[in-house]
Length: 318
Ligand SMILES: [Fe+2]
Image (cartoon, rainbow, N blue to C red; front, side, top):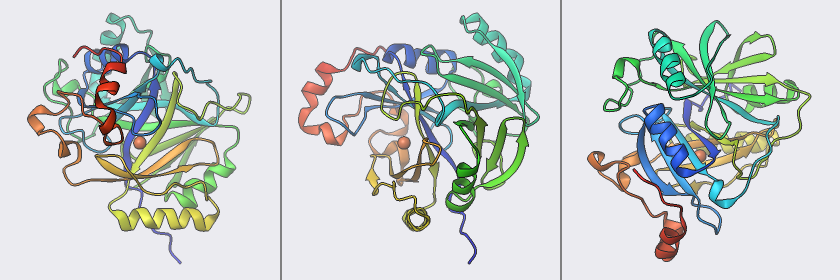
């Protein structure tokens, strides 16, 4: 029986960062992404901001979202068995601009190359590893009203790098459960792609057998998960049935995340993946396009605790 290929591309990548203001300023002022939503995590009993950054509409594969954890006091353990790097796509011709811009904001920038792609590597202020990868033909529309002009701006996600102790179990997961195609190896890296394998459709695995398991919990300084777009509920159900049929029964029920519906699976490497269906309207379900990201949105699970939530969350200037 042919294996269906329901995974389209990244939907969003979610990080546990440090202070909310530090995180907001890094993404909106340094990287010049748009703040497309300010809300709080839907899970748990202690409020944690959930900040979304992306392009004008916060479209799929443009989104980086963060849980600023410093207020909670919870720190993550870094290590393997977790997504380690976030790669974002910029035009090749913009790498020089970004190198200078990052340096002028005080970031240490290192040039690197993987699978023939040139990248600038640096760290989020909380220590998370970021890359800007130079891509010649990324047609996704960037945020158009930021400080950085469109022709130089970040297009969206390029890939993620998952740190693993060994490749075999992840290969099985990626090819049999997650409809990825293994296309290349480069030293300790293995690359999987979806669709035509363009930016936003890439997952790299990196061998790091010497490191301990990183945190699974929400804690400052670790990537929490990567979400992948599927077309509709039927595709999402097909992903869940396939996962469970293969024995990956650490798969969640469908969860309503306000702007999309999600199922989650703990992958054999330890990293958390999500298969996501966007709701009609996406980020505009609770704010008009013109107002997108301009005010805090109370997460529905906290609707009965609005005043408590607002009094608790650390101040955020925007
Ligand atoms: Fe998510």
